[in-house]
Length: 428
Image 1: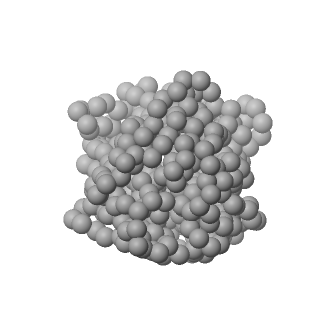
Image 2: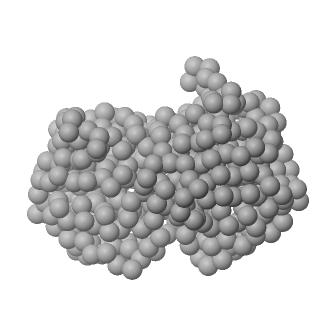
């Protein structure tokens, strides 16, 4: 168990400014594209969270990456190398992307992680790689990490994969697709959840010179080559959701510098959610400003978050302070994230006084003003830690156990949020 954080509300006055890290989702995709490009790419704005660090460390172990000030220099190759063992820790995205990359190699790579990551589903990705001719051997429980992966008789072609388990499986296959002989066609079975992340993958791949065609139930990537790039990673809307929810919980104004550059990210949907709730949202140059005055009336909402599911913890906490009944739908699949992001989130919200019911595909939340101080658990989930800390804005004190889990995506979260939250690090 890591350190806990005792969190209370800061004295908000005027417009507060919070800087958020670069998008780990964009960065992870750009790192893989740069690794598979023939030549040297220079990446700026790469965040230092655990997810990206897993990939950076894997590339460092084989001397594929170096640092030039705040620039990461990646020396790519269509036949890259990885260390014999990759410890993905808790990084689901990184483990899945590197599993796919390992299938390109003539040597065997073992992909492993911490116990919570070992419990997360991997079978659909493993099976797709096997169907494409890769060699995949489970070293523990079938369809889970740890797994040994090598090229085998890997080839391109066509493969079917479920769309309603994790879009990360699809993105992982897309990233290696241009390297495969004949390219790859992915036939999506059932609804594609988190479509915005598949679109993000396609957009980053296009930035590195690869053709990608994404339709309703199919992704086509012809055989081709990644082209080295100078690539800037934009600020992360998934992280920005936490400070941007502050005006819902207490009247204030929050400015996020540079966030408008990431407006095409799927989680930019948070801005429309905030407008629906009754907040004012404006773009000022490259900055995003969200505000609410004391006289502004908030409205309960019903919102499908299938394509922006990483926003659920932040939005759910905010909705619990909005009078009336709100519903989040279309996100039953997030039970298999770092935590059960429905059941675990609801349990911890209830500790703080929230009225929340877990539905088959989401949450029903009845607003209240009767919050209470509480000790909350993170369930190994960085987004739960950050979301639950926002209850401090409701005039209560929140102790976040194992708060260091925020290192997964935003290591300096509690420091960067001091304009909104005051926190004390308490070692357990």
